[in-house]
Image (cartoon, rainbow, N blue to C red; front, side):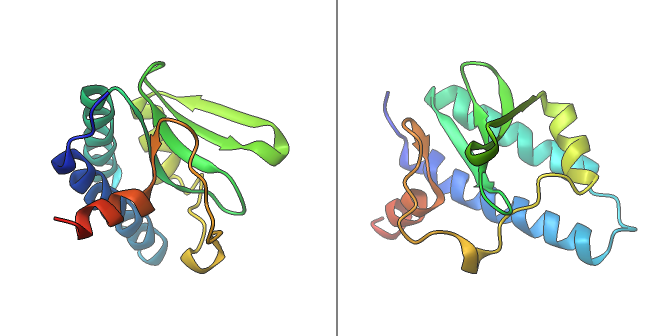
Length: 133
């Protein structure tokens, strides 16, 4: 399983765009964002499928992770402390995010020593890999 540096760069860019979309939706809930969310999520899916790896979208509030699992073809919200595992298709995930579900954790509350799950490209790794190019 090789990791294309361009795909990791795109992964980090997609994460930033997704977080910006969600922030905009909270600030201006009257603006439609479903189509942009759908396109962003579809790009996550394409990268994960081409790299045959799971991709983290972002950490969840208060704890957990939203990611795409390429083997199942689902977006998964995981909260280990609650033993919660919610699998969503592409359209279901866009609906959930557009409706304010699965809020991202604030950047200042994310653990500094975050260890990604095996096979998951973390935002920290993607940002680190981008800085070396």
